[in-house]
Image (cartoon, rainbow, N blue to C red; front, side, top):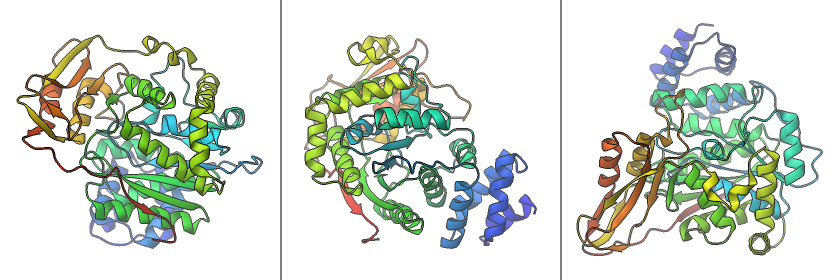
Amino acid sequence: MNAVELIERKRDAGRLTDKEIKWLISAYTDGTVTDYQMSAMAMAVFLNGLDADELAAWTAAMLHSGDTLDLSDFDMPKVDKHSTGGVGDKVSIPLAPIVAACGVAVPMMSGRGLGHTGGTLDKLDSIPGFDTQLDVARFREVLGRCGFVMAGQSETLVPADRKLYALRDASGTVPSIPLIASSIMSKKLAEDLDGLVLDVKVGSGAFMTDMDRARQLARTMVGLGDSHGVEVNALITDMDQPLGNMVGNSNEIAESIDVLERRGPADLTEITIALAVEMVRVADLDDPEGRVQRALDSGAAMERFLCMVEAHDGDPRIVGDRSLLPMATETTAIEAPRSGYVARCDARGIGIAAMRLGAGRTRKEDAVDPGVGIERHAKVGTEVTEGEALCVLTHRPGDISDALERARAAFEIADEAPAQTALIRERITSAER
C-alpha cells in the first residue's frame, strides 16, 4: 500500500478500508510510514473525520499494534479513569488511591501534557526519584502491592498510540474526536479492564469547547467500550476556568496531597469524589458514596498513595515536607485592575501562560520545568478589590512578558457577580447513549 494515496483519499473526504487502516497503523508503528506522513493523515482525519466503521478499525489497529495486559489473575474488579485534558486537572493523582482503598484495582496508564493542558506523568515526574516508565512485570507488581499503579505506556503496549499521541500535540490535531476517542480507548482496552469512567472536559480550557462536541465524544467512547464488552460511564465536567488553585506540575502534586488530607479546594474535591463514586459504582460494589468517604476519613487513601510513591521509587517525604518538590524562586503577581467580581478566569489563557513559563511543551521533544506554574487566588464569582492579587506566577529569572500578558488577559472584572456554572454538566452511560 502507499501512504500518500491513503492521505490524499482521506484529505478529499474519502473512506479507508479496514485493511488499509490496519496497514497504516502497523507501518507507522514500525517506521515505514514517517512522522511527517502521519502528521498529514492526522490533519486529514481532523478535517474530515472517520465514520463509525473506520473508527472501530482505527481503534482496533491501535489496540493490537503491540502487547496487551492480562490481569485475569487479579480477583478485584479492575476499573480505570481517563480525562480528556484540562487546566489544573490533577484529579487522577488523588482519585486513584481513593478508589484503590475502596477495593477496586486501578491499572492507570497516563499520558503527558498536550498543548495548554497538563499531563499526569509530567506532574508525577516532579516527585524526586519517581519512575513512571514500568515494564509489564513491574506494573503488575505495583498494582498487586498498592491496589493501583500510575505509569506511562511501555515500549510494547499500544506503541502506535505512544507515537501518535506526541505527534498530535506537535501537529495541531489534538481536538479531533476520532483521534481522541481512539487514543483513549485503545490504551484503556489494552488494560484488560472491567470498567472505565471518563471525565470529558468542556469549556475554554478543554479540547471540546461546546457541549455538543463534548457529548459526541463521550458517546463515541462509550460506544467503543460497548463494542468491546467494557462498561464505560462518562461525566461531562466544566473547564471554563482552571480546576483547583494550582496550575503546573510540582504545585499540582502538592494540591493533590491536600485533597487526600481533606483540605483541598472545593471544586477539585467535588470532581474527585464524584469520579471516585462513579468508579466504585462501575465496579459493582455496594455503598459507593460511603466507601469513598471512609477511604478519605480513615486515612486509607493516603496510605495507598504513599505505597504507590514508594513502589515507583519516589520520595514519600513530600507528603510532610513540600519543600522537597522542585520549585522556582521568582514570583510575580497579576493584580486586579479595579474592584468588582471576577466574571471570567479563562482556563485556556491560564494554561497557555503556564506553558510559556515552561510547565508544558510546544514540541514533543521539549523539556518540562516542574518548578514553574501559576497559583490562582480568585475564581469566577470572587469579589476582589483594586490591586488584589488575582494569581501569582512562579517562574525562573528572565523575560516572562508573554506569560504575564496571557495571564492578565485571562481575567475579567465586572460590577456584578456572574451566575455560577455547575461543575458536572451531564452523565452519559451505555444505556443513555
